[in-house]
Amino acid sequence: MTFPPNRPTILIVDDTPGNIQILAQALLRDYEVLVSTNGPAALELLQAGHRPDLILLDVMMPGMDGHEVCRRIKADPATWNLPIIFITARDAVEDQQFGFNLGAVDYITKPFEVPLVLARVGVHIRLQQKSARLEKLAMLDGLTDIPNRRALDDLLDRECGRAARDGTPLAVLMIDIDHFKAYNDHYGHGVGDDCLRRVAHTLGAELHRPGDFLARYGGEEFCIVLPHCDTAGATQIAENLRAAVAALAIPHAHSSAAVHISISVGLCSRAIGPEPDCGPALLAAADEALYCAKRQGRNQVVGGKADSVIV
Ligand SMILES: [Mg+2]
Image (cartoon, rainbow, N blue to C red; front, side, top):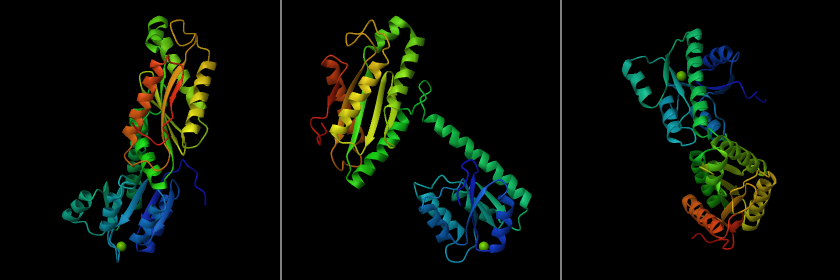
């Protein structure tokens, strides 16, 4: 079954099929529903990549109880932020407190009233959606609408780990718009902002492989992460980017590098299997190559000679 992407998904974990049936029936009108009749099966669903927007978790189950399931979900970096509502017949204050301390967002006691369950689920789903939107906004650059520095740091960290595990190459490009301060000074900040947006859009449009990632690094600097990309590939992409920005033909009467807006690119790549924490070193090496490109007259690509060396 394929789920339409705009309906939130609720995972119900309960060892009593009757409970699952009542809950699922009530929830199916507004949500996609996944069910498990025991803790290990629920954890397996999550391990297989399912990411429900909310989990309704029975506390009393034979074998692994709901508290243990919750503990494991919260201990896994891939699932720790999934909201969990405990459903249980144990309504003593200490029991509820115990559940909240494990990281649950709410507590529903049995026998439950379906309209109240729906109301609570609705509240938590809306909260979840709002925080997901905020999280996304916090990762975007407001001016260019592309990922920001924080998003880059997160992604680079993940990609370095992946490249180290898989023994695959990884390349980083640092890009700087040539004489952008002079451009801003002479054409004004509004025109400068427009230029940043056009360059960002052009760089993004030149990246065709699914894992390629572009971020605004700050000011007039951009950074691109190219997984599965060796030096030759990265150099080709960098030259394509330089040509694409030149083809915009945005006049720049105060640049020593060209008569139009141009970019300098520094690149660094690791041939196979970098260390999992090599992100900062890759950035620093690409940045050094970028400075070299600037020193040599700008509007050019530098780096990529020492394929497996990080300075
Ligand atoms: Mg039970």
